[in-house]
Image 1: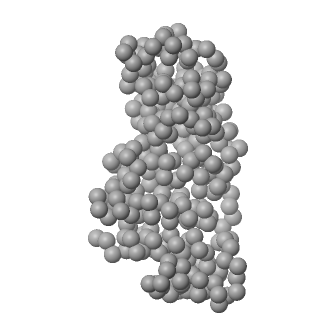
Image 2: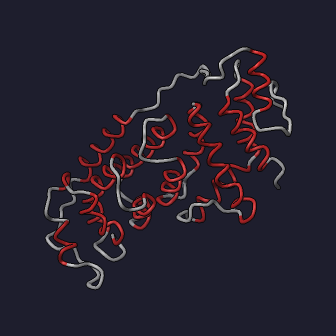
Image 3: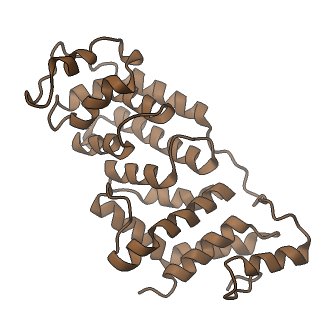
Amino acid sequence: MVRFISLTSRGRLSGYERLHNTTGQTGQAQETGRKNTMPSMETAKSAIESLYRIFERYPLRAKIPGCDDCISETDEQRLHNRPLRKLTSEDLDHYVWHAIHLWGDFQDFKHFLPRLFELEAFDEVPWNPEILFGRLRSASWETWPESEKTALQTLFETLWNDVLTGHSTRFDVDTLLCGLGCAMDRIEPYLEQWLNVRTPLAWKSLEEFVRQNIYGIQKKGKLQNSFWEQAPMQKVVAWLKSDSTLKTLEALLNQQSVPNEELYNSWQWLRDAFGRMT
């Protein structure tokens, strides 16, 4: 049981508001005693620079083979008109949608990879982020040399931290988590990190994620984002429905000397949505 919250059927925050009124606090986000040492977007920039350094060994071919019906000379030329760091999202848009499957191979993709993820992290792009992350799965990136895998993992962890701590405006939680799932099946570390960050924004994003996906999970056992790969999606669903996730949030609630609205809402949504599911 959560020791300081009494639930009623008259609104989601009734218990929170009662405690708020009795303590006389302002209801603003409170520190949990855990120092926030999560990286900022400067760390993401550093991770991108590492990609440029590590993947610079892969040159741009004079002609990248592709589907004759899909790739025009103009499309090809746009990849050669500027240095890699100067390529725009418009230059690379057609490539992203056709990379590996219909245009070039995984080594060509490695050449463009640093710029693609730089644009993805910091600029508006015309492609769905999940498409780019999915190209990594197509390229079997988890079989690449250790230095390349580590550089990508560092970027993923940094982007995820930045989203959960409010340093990133490029991604929302749903899009980035699905993107990570498009790239790999091993999604569990990012779910654990979601609870360990312990910021009001992370808790609020969890509440919103549950609210967005309740219907699909209850009726179909699926998340709403259509880009999800089956294996990582089922891991996320199982995590949301698990007793351990609910108990972790409950334990965090019990650690609060002053109630936190975002954390309370996340706990209550999970309890109400999945607490009785089998």
